Image (cartoon, rainbow, N blue to C red; front, top):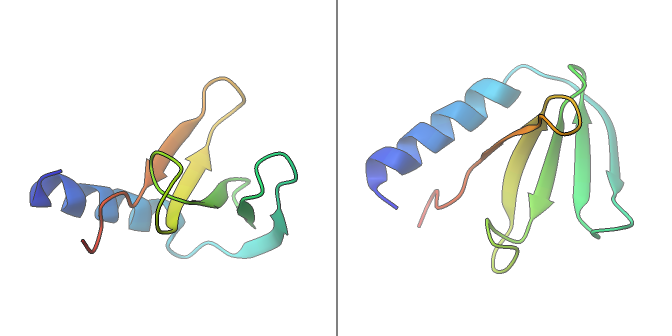
Length: 78
């Protein structure tokens, strides 16, 4: 992943979650991932990485079921 792509992902993630308040936090029973719900009815999942293994990566999920958009911090800080 190029440095330019990493910077874009970081900015997109920051824009999606900055200033939001946490309303609820829990472990999803089906995946075992921590979930942080935000006040705009979006969520942050902490998954192993973009492929589900390795170090923790935050992924912001928004949108209705079936039309969800994911913005993650994949590759940031390598």
